[in-house]
Image 1: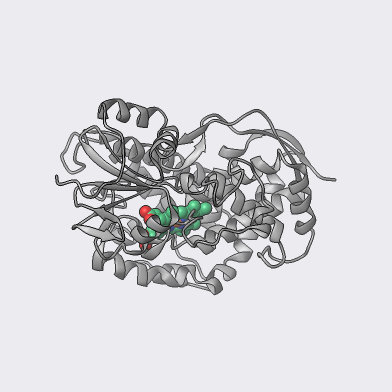
Image 2: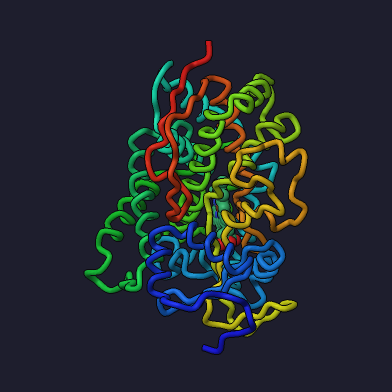
Length: 422
Ligand code: HEM
């Protein structure tokens, strides 16, 4: 492969780098950019990578998706469950789905989902004991799944057994996708005898999701936006669950975990939560700042990858087909020039010095492939954080180690003491 331009980068053992990536990808990226600057080209195993850690270059790649880039191998487009879906498709098949599903996520429709979202969070708060030590991560994943099923697919009170069944299989399948992205050997899905555990989980997940039926609602936008034939419809439902479940669950658990360590901000969120209004950036600015600050520190999608389909150049950056472009929101969000004391949880920065460049803070990606569920995710996050803090005092326990899987989570359970407010 003809490697383009003079982007600096290390020589040396590409296998050692691959091992370092498997051990600690965030540490490796940080080390590479500290040593070589915000654009680094390097080899890992047989592959060439360009890591971009500056908003300008990242913005150029993401905003030019349709003109010369396709998605990298994050989610394998060959997988029969969501491979032909909005997350992985390209070109006209992607554009058709994006157009069709856009009405689901319009502000008016997200607002119309409000009462179901509210009921789901209220039910969670009611069921929670008055004083208990919980794993915030596991609890918020469960709540996030319940919110996804109740808002998107009209399940008034998602049954506990359904939640557990869907949660178990989605979690297994996401871990499988993640290990597959890191594996040199990717046994094709369509050859009998390979990937049989994946097929078994996928079948049981489809059976569970297939029991959800459209119900009369003030809005039928979601069901009407899905493909009419049953097989594609089921796959599209799967895409929405897989894209929104862990991302939102982890975003809320990181925000609560930080609030459990910062009493000043917990009080600010509590104060706002006492208003009888639906949380919005206008009425709940501190709650929004807390959520944004935790999305900055712990962006659930910590790595985006793209492949150029032709020789491309932008100012002094040139890219060649065959190499992989990596953009890490986690790394971008810690650039000290944009976010001073970037390792610290400081929600006040969103009022005092919000970032100026549109690609400096990209928890939802950017360009045409920007997250379609962003408004719903923010509505779910604001509501969950606000209502939970209104009812419970949160005290986080112990330190956290990051686990950059398919989404950024905590390696160990996120223990926290929840005490009901009187
Ligand atoms: C805090 C929660 C969320 C975060 C941080 C997040 C983040 C992202 C990011 C970074 C992308 C772009 C990936 C790329 O460019 O390669 C994306 C795409 C996507 N997200 Fe989200 N997401 C969240 C919640 C949701 C929710 C709730 C849904 C739907 C129910 C959703 C559905 C999607 C879909 C379908 C795509 C693919 C869009 C396309 O390629 O056209 N996401 N998300």
